[in-house]
Image 1 (tube, each protein chain N blue to C red):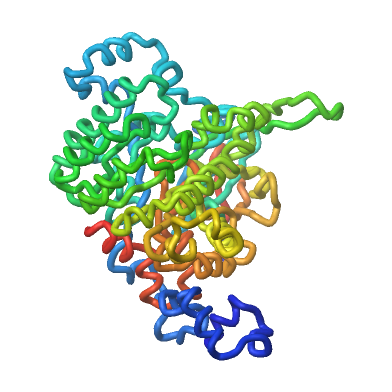
Image 2: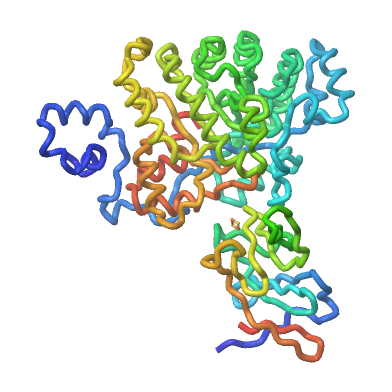
Length: 408
Length: 118
Ligand code: FES
């Protein structure tokens, strides 16, 4: 029995388990899949960020504005365009982009201005932190689930994709890859949108803004989206946004009197809801060749939810006939997580590495969230994990896993 | 052995303004606040951000009655442009946790010239 396995099942394991049952449990915790933790020999460690072959930022935001998108709305949606054009405060009255208190006061990078809506500016940002590839995600359109009108939501989704192609992907640089955008409003139309966009160069996934998505992500109304993503070989990325609290958790928004209260819970909270919905509604079972990526909630919550889901599965399988295996096994096989925001982990730097070890390091991918003001530079993650894992595991987390998953 | 390095003249540095310079390989900012000069490293102890390129700001606080919020507009806190941590430029300490401290340096004024001692 490995030391690592002992960590999982407790120190009194030898006394309680027969060798046969140990083997069974070892299968469940998937020891061979885990990165090698702290007993790694010094010579196998990686010491410096420069030694990495590739750093991939799996959550690189751009900041599109309504003015960017308007010219890209298809003629088919002329009426929707006419309304959006004449809306005095479209961020408020088309989208419901609201916060409990304005976040713009606390940091100059801000989150919503248009500073990073050109290729050159985005590449400069990657260069500032020596990042090789950025997987581009929307900014304003994280708020897409709050658009009330379905026609306008579809028109804006397609406009974003057209704008993305024209301004970021057709520019001939190959360091910016992107997720095509879908909205949750009309899944069958989004399947067509995936088919339209999937063949475009440098499209590597499907961005599904996920806070404010009602019903949550596991509902079979989204199957057309998942089917099209699977058929086109693109993973689906779920990205939260605390701005959307007003729609999905209005009561919490009302009593969250500060930006902090809102922001601290909404990202992990809404991702927990979506992940448990996805697993327990059997989406990975229905789409076994589809990978899912959860962005912008950090890693600390993953072991907690995994343990909790496994525990419920074993107790209540009568209501979970859709599942053929443990929730944690679906997670290890088909679910990935991006690392930002790591949180303030400095007091005991090893704790973050241990959380990643518990979550399953082969499914964890570095992300910066630049240019938002809670971004994590590569060094913040690297310095916490380099002494804990072997070289290969560190390389995987910082970029190789993304390179393989997204075919970079 | 520390030595003195001229960074500006007093008329170049008005109230609330700053100069950022490099002294022996270390970027250092000098601020003038209420007629006093303060030198502090342009290096954030959080994640190495360019601390002194951020905004100077005051501080929100709760009045003794426990209800009113107020804003102290004594703008002596530098906001790191990366993640918004606040440091008091007069002593280099993070305003929420003095465990986080940015190096500060002595400043001397001679003949209307501002020197940093490093
Ligand atoms: S680097 Fe200064 S606040 Fe993070």
